[in-house]
Image 1 (cartoon, rainbow, N blue to C red):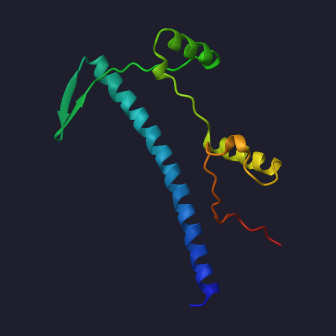
Image 2 (image 1 turned 90 degrees about the horizontal axis):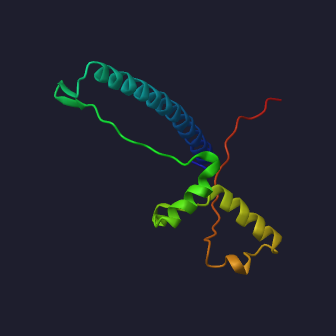
Image 3 (image 1 turned 180 degrees about the vertical axis):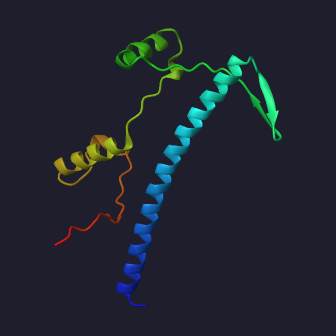
Length: 140
Protein backbone atom coordinates (compact mmCIF):
# COMPACT_ATOMS: atom_id res chain seq x y z
CA UNK A 1 0.00 0.00 0.00
CA UNK A 2 1.48 3.33 -1.00
CA UNK A 3 1.33 6.50 1.08
CA UNK A 4 -1.60 8.05 -0.78
CA UNK A 5 -3.69 4.91 -0.29
CA UNK A 6 -2.79 4.85 3.40
CA UNK A 7 -3.60 8.58 3.69
CA UNK A 8 -7.04 8.07 2.08
CA UNK A 9 -7.71 5.05 4.32
CA UNK A 10 -6.85 7.06 7.44
CA UNK A 11 -8.89 10.04 6.20
CA UNK A 12 -11.93 7.81 5.64
CA UNK A 13 -11.51 6.28 9.11
CA UNK A 14 -11.12 9.72 10.73
CA UNK A 15 -14.29 11.00 9.05
CA UNK A 16 -16.24 7.88 9.99
CA UNK A 17 -15.11 8.12 13.62
CA UNK A 18 -16.01 11.82 13.82
CA UNK A 19 -19.43 11.12 12.32
CA UNK A 20 -19.97 8.25 14.77
CA UNK A 21 -18.93 10.47 17.70
CA UNK A 22 -21.34 13.21 16.60
CA UNK A 23 -24.19 10.70 16.28
CA UNK A 24 -23.34 9.18 19.67
CA UNK A 25 -23.19 12.59 21.37
CA UNK A 26 -26.64 13.41 19.97
CA UNK A 27 -27.95 10.06 21.20
CA UNK A 28 -26.51 10.71 24.68
CA UNK A 29 -28.32 14.08 24.77
CA UNK A 30 -31.57 12.34 23.82
CA UNK A 31 -31.03 9.63 26.44
CA UNK A 32 -30.28 12.18 29.16
CA UNK A 33 -33.48 14.07 28.31
CA UNK A 34 -35.51 10.84 28.42
CA UNK A 35 -33.85 9.83 31.72
CA UNK A 36 -34.65 13.21 33.30
CA UNK A 37 -38.25 13.11 32.09
CA UNK A 38 -38.84 9.53 33.26
CA UNK A 39 -37.11 10.10 36.61
CA UNK A 40 -39.27 13.18 37.27
CA UNK A 41 -42.47 11.34 36.31
CA UNK A 42 -41.66 8.32 38.50
CA UNK A 43 -40.66 10.53 41.44
CA UNK A 44 -43.91 12.48 41.12
CA UNK A 45 -45.99 9.29 40.98
CA UNK A 46 -44.17 7.84 43.99
CA UNK A 47 -44.73 11.10 45.88
CA UNK A 48 -48.43 11.22 44.91
CA UNK A 49 -48.96 7.61 46.05
CA UNK A 50 -46.77 8.04 49.15
CA UNK A 51 -44.53 5.18 47.97
CA UNK A 52 -41.10 5.48 49.57
CA UNK A 53 -39.62 2.48 47.74
CA UNK A 54 -40.52 -0.64 45.80
CA UNK A 55 -38.77 -3.55 44.11
CA UNK A 56 -39.29 -4.47 40.48
CA UNK A 57 -37.46 -7.25 38.61
CA UNK A 58 -34.79 -7.47 41.29
CA UNK A 59 -34.12 -3.72 41.38
CA UNK A 60 -35.12 -1.48 44.28
CA UNK A 61 -36.37 2.01 43.48
CA UNK A 62 -36.19 4.51 46.37
CA UNK A 63 -37.63 8.01 46.48
CA UNK A 64 -34.90 10.39 47.60
CA UNK A 65 -34.75 14.12 48.00
CA UNK A 66 -31.57 16.10 47.43
CA UNK A 67 -30.92 19.76 47.96
CA UNK A 68 -28.98 21.51 45.20
CA UNK A 69 -27.70 25.07 45.25
CA UNK A 70 -25.98 27.38 42.80
CA UNK A 71 -24.74 30.94 42.95
CA UNK A 72 -27.18 33.61 41.84
CA UNK A 73 -25.81 34.59 38.43
CA UNK A 74 -25.13 38.27 39.04
CA UNK A 75 -24.04 37.84 42.70
CA UNK A 76 -21.35 35.17 42.41
CA UNK A 77 -18.56 37.51 43.56
CA UNK A 78 -20.62 38.52 46.60
CA UNK A 79 -21.21 34.85 47.45
CA UNK A 80 -17.49 34.09 47.21
CA UNK A 81 -16.67 37.06 49.43
CA UNK A 82 -19.27 36.00 52.01
CA UNK A 83 -18.05 32.40 52.03
CA UNK A 84 -14.47 33.55 52.61
CA UNK A 85 -15.56 35.99 55.35
CA UNK A 86 -17.42 33.21 57.17
CA UNK A 87 -14.42 30.85 56.98
CA UNK A 88 -15.66 28.72 54.10
CA UNK A 89 -13.18 29.95 51.49
CA UNK A 90 -12.17 26.34 50.80
CA UNK A 91 -15.41 25.94 48.84
CA UNK A 92 -14.33 28.60 46.34
CA UNK A 93 -12.32 27.49 43.30
CA UNK A 94 -11.05 29.85 40.66
CA UNK A 95 -10.75 28.34 37.20
CA UNK A 96 -9.59 29.42 33.77
CA UNK A 97 -11.25 27.98 30.68
CA UNK A 98 -8.66 25.87 28.83
CA UNK A 99 -9.62 27.16 25.37
CA UNK A 100 -9.56 30.78 26.54
CA UNK A 101 -6.17 30.29 28.19
CA UNK A 102 -4.76 28.70 25.02
CA UNK A 103 -6.02 31.59 22.89
CA UNK A 104 -4.59 34.12 25.36
CA UNK A 105 -1.18 32.41 25.44
CA UNK A 106 -1.07 32.25 21.61
CA UNK A 107 -1.80 35.97 21.53
CA UNK A 108 0.88 36.72 24.14
CA UNK A 109 3.47 34.67 22.25
CA UNK A 110 2.56 36.41 18.99
CA UNK A 111 2.90 39.85 20.60
CA UNK A 112 6.23 38.90 22.24
CA UNK A 113 8.28 37.99 19.16
CA UNK A 114 7.04 34.36 19.05
CA UNK A 115 8.37 33.69 22.56
CA UNK A 116 6.43 33.05 25.76
CA UNK A 117 6.61 36.20 27.93
CA UNK A 118 8.87 35.83 30.98
CA UNK A 119 6.01 36.46 33.40
CA UNK A 120 4.23 33.32 32.10
CA UNK A 121 7.36 31.13 32.10
CA UNK A 122 6.83 28.15 34.37
CA UNK A 123 3.18 29.04 34.93
CA UNK A 124 1.83 27.48 31.75
CA UNK A 125 2.82 24.48 29.68
CA UNK A 126 2.83 25.19 25.98
CA UNK A 127 2.90 22.48 23.33
CA UNK A 128 2.00 22.09 19.70
CA UNK A 129 -0.38 19.39 18.56
CA UNK A 130 -0.90 18.58 14.91
CA UNK A 131 -4.47 17.63 14.05
CA UNK A 132 -6.44 17.23 10.87
CA UNK A 133 -9.39 19.54 10.25
CA UNK A 134 -12.37 17.85 8.62
CA UNK A 135 -15.13 19.71 6.83
CA UNK A 136 -17.40 19.22 3.87
CA UNK A 137 -15.74 20.14 0.59
CA UNK A 138 -17.38 22.89 -1.45
CA UNK A 139 -18.81 21.75 -4.75
CA UNK A 140 -17.51 23.35 -7.93
